[in-house]
Length: 434
Ligand code: SAH
Ligand code: SF4
Ligand code: F3S
Image (cartoon, rainbow, N blue to C red):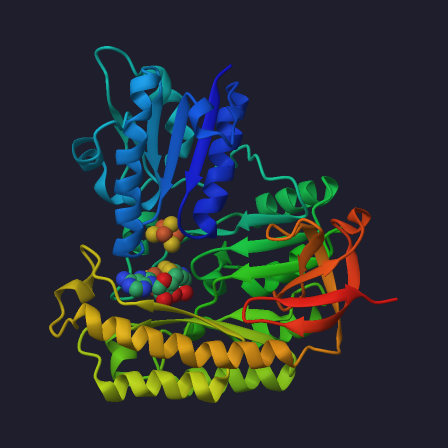
């Protein structure tokens, strides 16, 4: 039996690509395994968004190489964003790797595997800019939540970001294919879909259908109860989208709207296409329509030339907006990006200091906002047993908060009302309300 183990780093795009890799290979007779030692094919689906992610990959390959001693037939394949950027170089730098495939060539994996021989010990397929919106077979984890890609690539070229180089130019998937996939998911019992794209607000199919139209188009699918989407670019949030969110009850009460910085000077250097006050106006508009909405964001601290004053503006923005959650990152130099060539790179120590200040500020805000739920009853879509405490169930609210509570297994994959009794930084706790 041919067994495959897939290890995935990075964002939901990569998670979803791994589901496709699993789908393609299971059609070829491979079986998935959780146990890496049992595998005769290991696929590493990599991320290069920050340097740390890249280090993790190279040290993992070093570890896995050892497995080849006990299992000389073991094949190691590398895909994802590092593969797309480095191609051939991976074979040279990461000894032990047999095949390398790009973000838009996962359908080539079976061909690469078949091509391996005494003569062809290493094979690489990393096309530059292949247009590819084929519907691959997908092997999703069993459950009720599914990721659905609506677009590929990104055209924004934020000055710090590798994604346009690793995922290519933006391309929207035809609406009919998306609808068919969502209908199929509903038939299989999925209840929640997350529409994926680096910038879903610029979805545009045949110049006729924008992202709001797509939400209207998918909304009627029976069986799908919750619709989420990731990620929205602040410059492209339109009034039409805000109206659609209000009109469509299945669209969840949560929006992830990456701010990146509170300083207009830094935002301009980042090439984000908005000022803080333009961003804040959009937040105000959204909150006016949906007072209960949860808003989360990403910020980068220590961007080249960021002064104490610039950083203070980011902290002030966090204080003013009071996000439900903030994902804060230290700026990381990425090869080929514009910011890599900017002057004024900051020391590691200063970036770390700013990161911990930003995280400390947000921990207080997130915990307080979570604690505001105590005593209230929330609707939870139950995902399964809690990993940390098997006696408890876990699920999420419409606002994407994790809720852990005691309850019978029969509630798994169902909606239940849970009365919140306690709240922490990363989750709420409660009991089923009667
Ligand atoms: N397309 C999405 C997110 C892409 S990456 C968007 O535009 O929001 C996710 C987050 O990683 C970004 O929002 C940003 O905050 C962070 N990030 C990207 N490149 C980075 C870099 N070079 N250093 C630090 N953080 C980075
Ligand atoms: Fe990167 Fe900017 Fe594109 Fe997001 S919008 S993927 S941060 S370039
Ligand atoms: Fe990482 Fe690529 Fe996603 S760089 S964050 S896996 S698009």
